[in-house]
Amino acid sequence: MSSMNHLHRTRLTLTLKRFFKKKEIAGLAPGQDREPETDNTFQHTDLRLKSKFFPVWDKGNNVDVFIQLVLKDFKELTACSFKHNLTLKEKKRCEFLKNNFDLVVKQTDKGGGVVVMSREYYLKEAHRLLDDNITYKVLANDPTAIYKEELRVLITEGKESGILTAKEFDFLFSEFSVIALFYILPKIHKSLDAPPGRPIISGIDSQTSNLSKYIDFFLQPVVKKTRSYLKDTSHILRDLERINWEAGMMFATIDVTSLYTSIPHQKGVEAIKRALDEDGSLSIDQIEFLLKSILFILEHNFFWFENKFYLQICGPAMGTRFAPSYANLYMHCWECDEIWPKAGMGASLVLWRRFIDDIIIIWKGGQQSLIEFISSLDNNPYNLKFTSNISDSAIDFLHLTIYIKENKIETKTFFKRTDSN
Image (tube, rainbow, N blue to C red; front, side, top):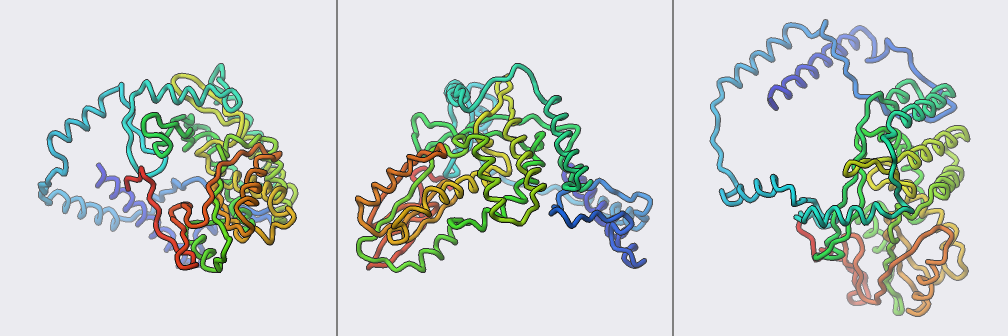
């Protein structure tokens, strides 16, 4: 069946190439026969539904002949024997795990491992999270039909005002969608015996998944311009190379406690508006449409778990496409208000870099002043709480152990105790 699927895709690819090649020879670019959509007032994306176009009238016998020859070769191939990489005992254990309804098998939250836990514990931990009535609430019925109509109204307004092209509108609205599912990933790096769960909402092909992609298209470039932006491990390595270590300097890492579910909807939308206004690359009307779209996703973030429908009422879903950019810009606004303006910070804060909710600091000014500074961070109007680690010699951050050797900053790969990769 897999070989036949590959053949079908090959046939489609060859047919499309032949069809569009003829257009180029005739002096037409692919798609030139359709009226171009342009609007200089608003920025547009290249997001569109996957094309199902197949010019069967133009496929040509040569393509069919090629497919038939390939099929003939397949039939003449002899089946090759292969050796199983599992023993009979291991295969029986896999079947046992697969068919045992009393067990749940999940990937770990971090470290690449696999956890086998009792269904009783898994459900208990899931319900512990879902019983948080500040973050979630139970819905009486499936809201799909009502929410779909509200989504139609929202993006129709965008299309009629010229913010959305016809292709973008078709991409954002679907008559049929998948209901998002809730599950948890065990945090065995926190506890091996009773790992807490990280809540994940799997929203692939859900009602707002494409709208989330659309929003992220505009938020990501703004995130990359923020002052503390950190792309990856290589980025922090380049920053560390530029720092001359001096006596009295200290490392600190700061982690935001449950960042996503700590962001109130209205406060989060206000932060995005502020960031987009400061960036200045989008028109007022387009910013307003993006804010409405963000608020729509936040207020319609429903999912299913154990025969019940739930609505997340605080923070973006862990799993929706625009959530990292949304959280990044929320943290950026917090930094603009609470970090950069503080007096004397330029002398003490040698380095401040942030990867979403993970922050690294190099501080010059003594351990006591660093402790006082970190303690003051919890007092903020952004509903953020923090945990931290401090050291004058070595600290772990992202995938690195950063340490001092002969008054120079050195690094090596950091492996968590529970890493399995």
